[in-house]
Amino acid sequence: MTTTHYQTGLKTQKRVVLERGVKQLGLSCSDEQIHQLLIYLEMLDRWNQAYNLTAIKDPLEMIGLHLLDSLAVSPMLNGESCIDVGTGAGLPGIPLAIMNPNKKFTLLDSNGKKTRFLFQAKIELKLNNIQEVNTRVEKYLPEHGYDHVLSRAFSSLSDMVGYCDHLLTTGGSFLALKGRIDKTELSDIPKSYMVDEIHPLNVPGVDGARHLIKIVRH
View (tube, helix red, strand yellow):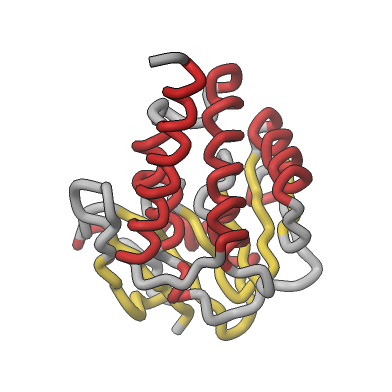
């Protein structure tokens, strides 16, 4: 098999896996959105070879572990503005911005090479609903709060609410992507917050437990 035939076959396979996964998540995705997600996947693979943006190297694994894992959150976004804290290479922020073009997303990370990638992705994907911010979360003081503070980067929920409380608007919510539920971690959340909902996520192509934890102020 020639290199060209292999690349064409892999491209087709990625599209099939992505479209099947989106359908299994129960999401409606246009051809243009699928195209954008695949371009983002190609960019992530290309930049990853030089900048080590993610530990996952196989593009097919990235579909489940990165794209579909991010998109699984989409049905829970009922607000208009979101900030993805510790977004890294734009996860879950960029897939969610593609899926929700009418919502505004701020992608925050303290790593300069990662925010340079985010800027390039915004340009190439023509995403007018995202803004990349290169700073530490405690130093970022937005003019207005956000309806949702998203993250899959924090090691503990108490750290997430502690560092990000100033980002949340009145009536907003923290949305944390986690693996297994740790009852001790839940009980360590400051008393001024409460776990409002825990959503088990069945992400195609991802083994092991995945949950979305929604936290609100009392």
